[in-house]
Image 1 (cartoon, rainbow, N blue to C red):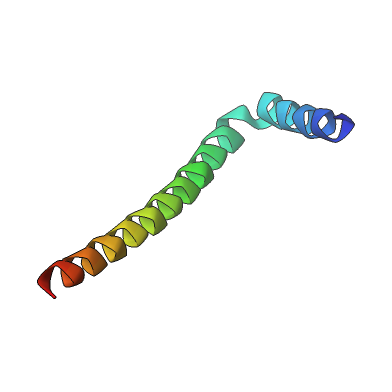
Image 2: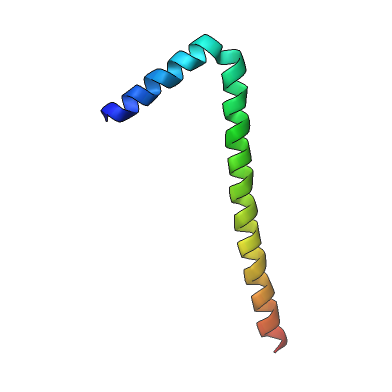
Length: 58
């Protein structure tokens, strides 16, 4: 738990000191990661759909 409190302290300090610059950067990074994750999930689902289509035609 101490590890997390250190991270939170650093994060809160960085937000207080450079909120305008760091905040948006963090949000952009999180958004990019989220988009990558969603893309992977969509690709997996599309592959599954292709396989079921092939099975239906057979």
